[in-house]
Every structure is written in C-alpha cells, then in structure tokens.
Image 1 (spheres, rainbow, N blue to C red):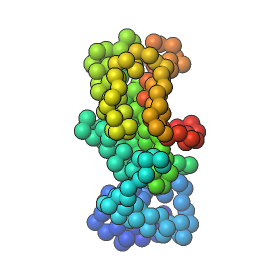
Image 2 (cartoon, rainbow, N blue to C red):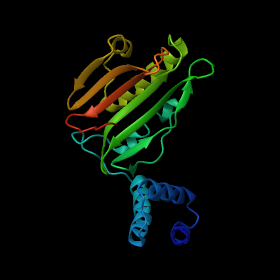
Image 3 (spheres, one colour):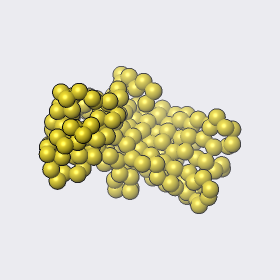
Image 4 (tube, rainbow, N blue to C red):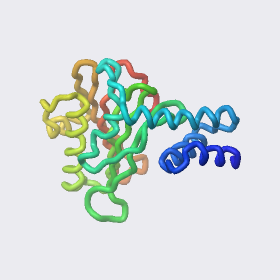
Length: 208
C-alpha cells in the first residue's frame, strides 16, 4: 500500500477529493496489483474529467448520473460521486435525520444505481422509527418524493398525497416506473421503511 500511496500522491498532487475517491475505490474493489492500481488512478482522473462536461443520456437508457445525483440538492440532500462499487455503479447521500427530536429519529437517504454511462434506478428511502409518523417527517418525505418524481419524469402532473394514500402503488410514464412501498421492521416495534423508486423499464435491479 505504501507504493500505491506514494504513486497516488504524485499522480493527484493537491487534488484531495480525487485522492479520497481513489482510496475508497481500491478498498471497495480490493485492487492490489500494480497494474490495477495504475488503472484505478487513471480512472478517477477520467471520471472527474467526465463530470466537468457530462455527456447527454438518451431517455430510453436512463438519466445522466451527473444530473440525477443532484436532483435533490435544492432540498438539502447531497450525494457523493457516481462510482463503481462491488457489482454496480452508485451514488448516495448520507442518512439525514428528519422529524421530531427523539432517541431514534426518523431518517431519509437518496440513492441512484446504474451502469458506467447512465443511472437506471433512483431511490428515496425513509426509515420511520417513531410510529405513528409525525407531520414533520411526513411533510419532509412528501416534498422530497415530489421533487424526485417530478425531475425524474420531467413532469409534475401527479398528486403526491394521492400516491402515498394508495401504498403500495405503481405508475408508469413512457419507459419509467414509479413505485412506492412500505415494509415493517423485523423488530415489530411499529417502525417501517418507505421507499420511492423510479426505474427504467427492463432494468435488472438485483437487490438494490
């Protein structure tokens, strides 16, 4: 690792963001050979170059990951860079606490998955630890879901409150499916998970 670290410092110089991305990538993907290390350095630099001038993505393939990762930035939800992790490409936010104060607050996070060129699946996941759900958490989730669906579909002709009242629910527009589901926690403490998912028709989402 000392060889790799010295090489990376020379390669990235003062770009600490690139260095941090590279360290994450080699650990996640277990890169150990010198050839793999050199390739991973070049890949980080290439990804940053693409980010600075992202190519357009045809609607039939999904969303530009560089645009989709920022769909909720205006609502205070930031994600990390779009990168390869294990068996997929991903970008995600941290878990963000919402709702009323308490020992275990409700939380929400945003994820996108796909391949190197396009995001295929967008997911808003909320963990409701305090049942019944507070108005504060409900309003936050509704605002985020409305923003995400609107930007993902390029259309705001839907009623988010009506969709939430019909859980589980699925709608389709063109080649995109929107689903909202609820799953109770295994602990049976009254908590549950809400997921709002928008994905491209035919995408094999595995367990994401």
